[in-house]
Length: 568
Image (cartoon, rainbow, N blue to C red; front, side, top):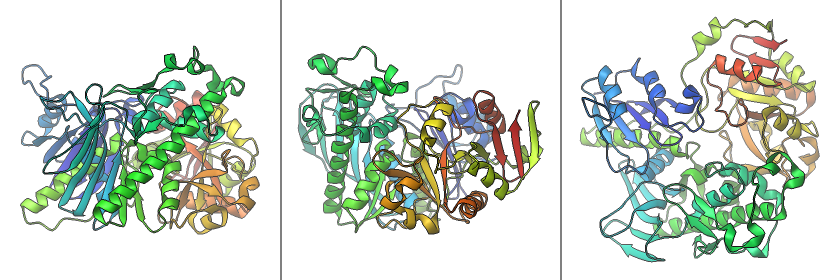
C-alpha cells in the first residue's frame, strides 16, 4: 500500500512538499517560481508535483485560518483543492491550517532522525486558537514531547493576543499554557526589525546589525517575565509588532531606511536596540530549552519555528548546553511546516494500517525540481561566450579576485544557498564584504557565510563540539589566529556563518573548494545566495541570466556541464 502526499503552505513563504511513502522527494517555495518575494498560495509549486506524480492526499497548511473557505465559483472549493482534484478526483483533502506549530514540531522531529526528543517551537505567530470566551489568541511558543514516531504531543503552549488579560495561566487535560496580550519572544524581535526599517519578516538583518551595538541601559527590559515589555513593544497579532516611538523621544525616527546604505547615518540607538533584542531573546530561548529538558528529561532537543533561523542563538545554545544533542531544523521557517504536516499524516496512515513507517531523516536540502535537462540543453544567449572549464580553472578565477556564480541541478530548500545557487568569492579579500554587498545591492553591515571542507573546519573555526554544519544553521567563532586570514567572511564580532561540505553531500562544490585550497591554502569559499537584494533566489537558468543582466555579475559556472558563461 503506497501513499503520495502533497502538502502546501498558503501563508507567507508559500511552499510545497511531496512525500512519497514517507520519503521527502521534493520541496520548493512558491517565490522561486513566481519571482514574488515571500509569495503565498502554492499554485505553481503544486503543479510541479501533480503533473508528474499521482496524489493520494492533499494537506492544506498555513496559519491563522479556521477552516477551508469556499473561493471557487460553481464548485465552492478551496482553490488548491480544486486544482489538485482536476488531476486526481479521488484525492483525500485534509485542512490542517490550525496545526501550525504541530507542523514545525514534526518537521524538526522527523528531520532529526532522533528516536525521541523534545521539540521547542519559537515563532512569531502560529495558528489562531480562538474560543468564544476568549479574544483571538495565537500560538507563540510551544513545547512538544515526541516520545516516538506516533506520539507527538504538546505539553506547553504560550499564546499571544491583542486584547485580554495581562497575564493568565491555565491548564487543561493536554498541556499547560500561558496567554496574555504582550509580545512573544519572536514578536519583540519583529518589532525591532520593523523599527529599523526592515519589516517584520526580515529579522535576519537585525541579527546582522546586532554585533555593532552594545549594552544600553535604556533597553535593558525589552522583555519582562519572558514576554515583551508592554511599555515599549506593542504586538499586532497575527501580523507584526511595533516599538512605541512616541513614548520615548530618543526613539523617534522620521527616516528609517537611509542609513541602510550609508553607515554614517546609523545611530547608537539603532545598533544598541538590535544588540539588546539579540542578547535578551537568546537567553530567553535558552531558558525555554532548560524548561523543556526539565519537563521531559530528554537530552535530544529539536528547535523549530521562525526564530530557529537565528544562527547566532543556535551557537549560543550549543555552548550553553554542551551535553545536549541539538537538531536545529533547517526548514524551521513557515515554508517548512509542510514537511512536518506531510510526515505527520504519513505516520498516522501507517499507524492506522499497521504499516511499519519509513524513517527518513533529513540528509540533503537539495530538494528542488530536477533541472538536468535544462542544463544539458542550455546554450549561451547573445552577449555571452561559453568556455569549457574544470574546477581548477574556476578556483583560479576566484583566486584572481573575480565573483563567480554557480548553478547546479536541484535548488536548496529554505532561505540559504549551499553551492547549487550561490555567488562565490575569495574570503581572503580584506574589503570583500563591501564589494559583494555593493554588487548585490545589500545593506553595508550584512555579513556573509563561509563554505569549508568538513575535514578542515576545526582548524579554522570553534565548532563547539559540532560534528558538522551542513545547512548553515550556526554562526560560529573564527579561531583568533585565522581572523585576519578570512576577513571577507569574518563578521565584526569575529564570527562566521559556516557551511561544512563533504564530497558525498555535493561532489562538484567539494571539488571546487578543494581546488581553491590547493591554489591558496585556504579550504574555504565565500558563499552567498544567488540573487539580488529583494529578489528570491534563482531557480532556473533564465533566472540566473536575468540576475547577471541586471547586475555587475559576469561569470556563471555550470559544473555539471563543465561550462563557464562569461558576460561580455
